[in-house]
Image (cartoon, one colour):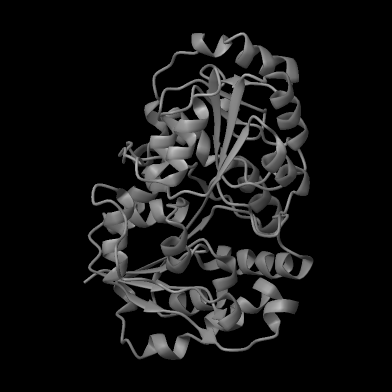
Length: 389
């Protein structure tokens, strides 16, 4: 029997609440395809104040990847350290998680797991004590650095230091250490002398699920009728968005509807952007949606956009939304953030306001025709991980 222990940053409670299939859940899909018999899911340490609950009910459409994952997760053995009151949630925030993860060891030991036939996957540096325990027991450790929490703008100094400590320790005993961008690869080389395997973000073949019954979809259809064209953005919102660029583009493209879909990033409140989303006449903010319906919404847009800030406000260096966009064959315009230059022959890349205006108003986008590059699919992106498994 082959076991998989799954310790994601966005745990199963986050997945259940948001319905968003983040990178670690794509990885889970790939891992489960490698003849896993028993799945163990480990959640974040939580308190009454930040508690989330997991529902066995599967609300995803049966044809979706999310539905299949939910089915398998629901059958898994689940662990989570929970305490009713802990003041560290205010003062230490994520920096108290290592202690919470370590406190799970006693419960895990009761399971009598055959660790020598066990794979452990994590992208969570705060779980380092638990990962070290599994390693000592003989499990194979896969660590995927999909974000750099030492440099992440939403974390405080204490959290960043704990994250760096976690990365440094995990790098010493992992059997497979990967990352999602060249920027993180370079960071790993300089910070703790490891050269991780680069596995850029990817996508699966689209499974289009109609969103006709969603209120957000009905709102989009109604508002689109008032404008000549629609420019869409789907992704997390926060400091990564260049609100000045968005403001100017909206001002100079009055007959275009700009649609923003996604949650606001925790700890990255962008008041100027929030104000724009609320008060700009030709901006429609629809809030977050489940990843199940992403392609239904993308299909309604004439242009797909990534108006991200370049430089200090960047994060990661490998925008997943770009690969989702490319999966549609639709025209794409983005600022020159890290990771997009690979597709410069297929998409429009510019931080120049005039280029954005020309692309939209003069309908330059209509000449942008391309085929979805096969290299963006997970079976190609994660080939080294699949070979390792």
